[in-house]
Image (tube, rainbow, N blue to C red; front, side, top):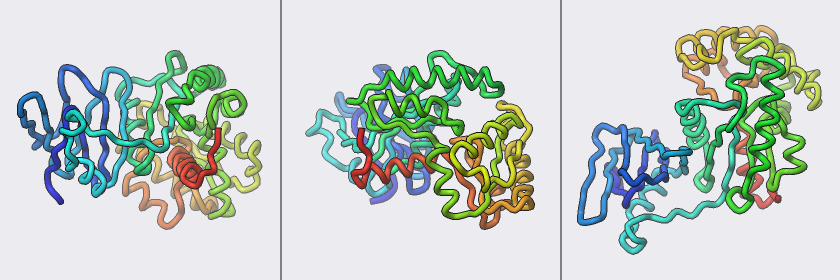
Length: 315
């Protein structure tokens, strides 16, 4: 089956290449879409939304953006089920439920960005949900910011219902509050950098960090030492741009490409990004050539999924 897909009442599907994202928040005032070419069919009390393949559709609920990823063929199978037998809504079985904690207090647009990035990379049987901080720093530029972040992340981690989630992922390369949460949280907790660095060591003898600010590269170098990889770190490079500038594609791509080229000159066999969810454009990837670029948040999520699927992740 190809082309448009009809979905049951108040269920939205969006396609990106071969990846389908089902967004499951419901709103009494109806479905919000941003898809040109989407159409609705009203038949009695049942509403179906038809979405052309290749179009991006987003529905953001009142509180959290909530997404589940499905490959195209699986999405088609789900979409063509008889929704009437299920009260007009399709039920989807969840397997691995991951709570992701933002390290800073972000605006709605940034929260959506983080959610979508993780959902795009999640496996078919993984549900991810990114949580904002109720109180926390708005950036991580000073030691005070990092201390505030650790406290806020710790509280949010403790406030986790083990009946709702199977694991926690801290969405920060500094692994804030990782150790206390591993000891006190009700479910397994993962830090992106503790999970990523052993994998970097498998594919490269030497690596470089690239982070947004100079102070952040210093913190990352300290983390490499603490985790036992300091001898393999050849350089820590800073983009030297603000958090707001880092969200502007041209500024970010130009600056990142220069720093990757510099890391190659430094003798790095791999680059570990000082951000969990940055999107790397073709220009940035081309500047690296064949050198691996590690995105710690995505690496950690994939590692968690493998542990879960192999029955190796316990509470």
